[in-house]
Image (cartoon, rainbow, N blue to C red; front, side, top):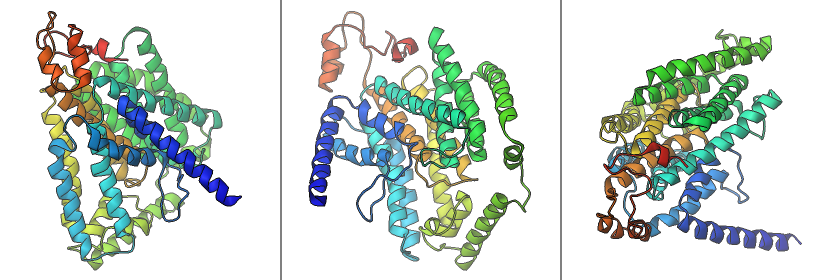
Length: 435
């Protein structure tokens, strides 16, 4: 009987894989939506011994074979050098102090820095794919926010409050971006969504998520130069924050702003940092090897990285993030008015927010890290898309530029109409970009 169930599960799994591949080849937005939309659900769904993965990671691995069937370039783009260099430095420093958990940790780093970025940059074929992925994430954010408000709990669906909070912070940044680019009725819809997510963020009591959300939204406003919108958003969120804060019990309020070293959570973080410092003291130049993160509660990515790989590893880690953020910012004016503009703005906001969150909480954990680095991949893909595909004129001239790249482009060219997402001068029409 048990063997028959195994065969049924195996057959069902094989059917799902084939179905997923067949749909993903025709609609590349599907795998991206699954990867980003399911990222907040950090639960382990593996049934095989020795393997641990979430639903998002499962679909990420299923999407890897699709990279070999892609019809255009771009895997890591201009980020290949910094990311591979940082990963190589980390691996080289770890070889001298290899631990039992080093292999798993290196694979985890490669998964987020290389695989997630490569898949999310190479699969999308049009701005619509990006928009559908963000819409999927926002639906999940709506579900999590509603459950947090209804249950008045920081723990549900087997998820920890810090994981829920980090995912909600990402959803808030994406919702703000959608609000800035929407009009009429949809603008009111996103206002309500922002209010609900902000309400839920307060209730889950994740202070690191509060910081990530604040930094991400501020970065996004600076990217877009919408300081007036930031003031309007403040008028929206301040009453929401005040109302949700008033609903919290006194114990939760004391927890949120209690930094007394005698409190359990503050004391635990101090002890974790002291442990990391002691490990670094034992090998101050090379560190004790990647994998230490699996042996204690690593709630500060700076001390963790310093303990694992020393000063050189810290430079490689923060250098990789700096290269991404600086590279995105330097392209800010060049991509203005193209599909890469909102994609790069959101990517910088999510990545900076995740880095700030990692300074006070877990960095190398499922969920928000997939969304942050996935957004970086989407930004690379949209930049490539914007550069490669030029707009058509009203008379259909320029159609040969499209037809030589892919069947999808050939169909666009044969219609003798301007591409759906561009105006005549090559500027993005944001109204047409939205789905």
